[in-house]
Image (tube, rainbow, N blue to C red; front, top):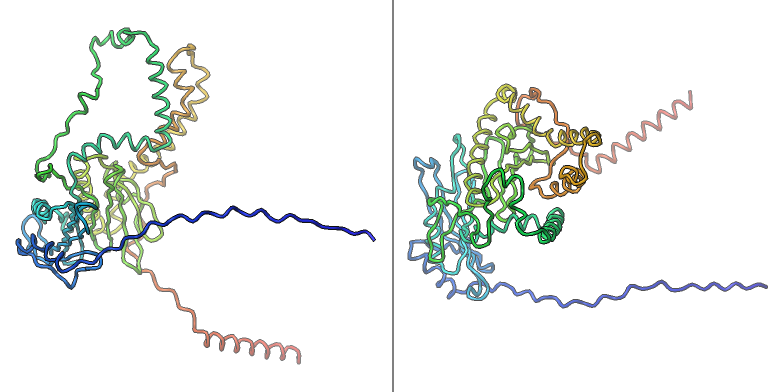
Length: 457
């Protein structure tokens, strides 16, 4: 009898990973009575008293009692101010304290002002130099909360000089640009001396083009003295990071990043149990810098193109936020049919703006077959540019601050709905399990009786 022996090799096991040592997590030490007395001493000298019921000693957070800010001509809204101190365990070794000033109105709208530092006396002086009413503005009768962070002017200038190069270097296009610059520097080093003077446009103009050097540096930026805060370590500047407003049933939220220089993001939402019925160009009709809205599940998202660096970024965001709130207040106060009547021309401009990326792509595709009819020499710049057009276009695409959207925009039409806000009716709840079982049993009995009657007949 033939015997068959089956031999199988064991599956190869994956090498076991060596356990990595975990970093010990240092818990926060709760605030002691001695630390609390030391921390609240500068506040007590200014007449501020700690609110121990609202404080969180385990998280090293001290809260102070609220202060009322009456309304005046600049801000006709009564406000309430709260101070919150986030203390650090060892300031000299680990970091800085954080002092937050929260300002609220009667509706619950809140804004904040954040200052970081080691000396509490200096932090209080910095907050005192920023008026409380700067955190709240009124546009078309709508209170608007604005949140800020105190930043050093020297750090802002340094970040502004290096921010553009850093943002470009992090992208794929930035790395390609660095390679092209290296090749250009290599070719430039091989050219004979005095080759710049023999260029045709240099002879025609007869003037030297100033080239910035590391010694001269960039041109100084004129700063607004009203926005600066004088300190011993240098001037500080309040930088806006967020904004919020309530316009009828619409909640408007603005978010501005401090470090990347991207456009400010907008979010339009409403209360639970309802949805907004608004067109995509509701805010884009304000101006070219306002982008169309996009529907994201339960809210709408938009953006505003603003200045990338300080000191122009904060005033620009404040101005555009005020224009947005005013536009929403005037638009939502009227029926939707009036929107198309008032902004018909602006809506056509928005449609053209949305079609620009697609039109550029179509124009390039249409002009491509005509390249073979051009009479170009072998060493012409135009031929070199056309040959490298695809990588250059890809490079410019990755270096943009915001990605273009290729779409066929809808034509502006009058709005057919009557209200901006629509209540969503709750779905009918399913019957409970016993009732559902009884209903199924009755249906089964009726079916059985019907079949028995058919069989007897």
